Image (cartoon, rainbow, N blue to C red; front, side):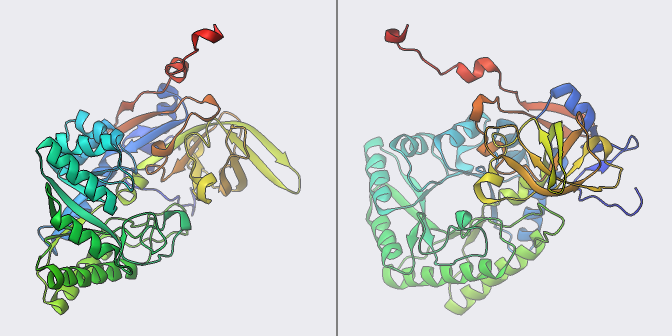
Length: 441
């Protein structure tokens, strides 16, 4: 391979055949057996990321709870892995909650999120006795209290607060600033009103506060600032209502590497600044250190995922660029279209060759459908296998049936074994919910 060193994660390596290998499985063989597009999930890497979070934070604060953010990727097999690794789970819909419950995930280790939880979702949370409901508005506090009384149950809640921090990330994934649909603002009276209402509402037990400031963050100062602002507010709640809140959920948001130029902080560095900021703020406010809860998603599953595509036509436009078409795109990865997300890739069946060909990788949908705007890969031709890295988070989770595409299969690879954890959709699956009314017969 000369001086060429590809950006590899976890168990990824280039094997003796010159092919990309993940979890001891040759990706060329995976594509032949399971077809393409194919999501490949590296089990060992996934488990190690879970363990890194627990090690780094519990070394500094033994009672830390790490809750995997299921919005990044949630399938039943992943629920089992997260449970086995001792993590809690954060869900944001009835569908995610149902997936977790069907996988046997303990409801007491589940947190339900959402800026507009339906009546069905709130009742489901009560009936299943989920561990925490993270309430997002005054009206939701009132509705949940009413349902709890009607159902004869009690709900443990956290109040989501918008701390007023504008992070350096894409506008679409900033969530902690004043101008946000999420939470009750610290900079207005809304957060205090929420605490007052929750304390007065029958059927609710206010356990603490929640804040999530954004996603794909590389700067650590914002995490420290969030901890400081939330502790200041908890001290204000103590002074105003005589209540010491015992839990503080600071969400997730740590970024990952999508391209060789990306240099995200380590989990260890995040733990150092977040725990240090929390302890310093508590000491300054003379406030007992609350139980810290984290909700990492992307930084656990992102680099554990790789997507394999079959290369179709390769079109050279002299003086302009080379287009490489693949057998997927917008329907299995909408992130580039949503917010210009960037990735890196290599030709999996030529992984030991130097990347010398600059190309644009395009999907096969009826849109511009640019998967990788600019990437330099190995000399590519029709029939090759393209591997796109860091696709574990928000790829399958956001996948669609645009152009009536069937969503891809997903395999879990470990120590040379590949197991299907999501079946490839069929054409019959696509029309399973279609109904022709009698008057059109």
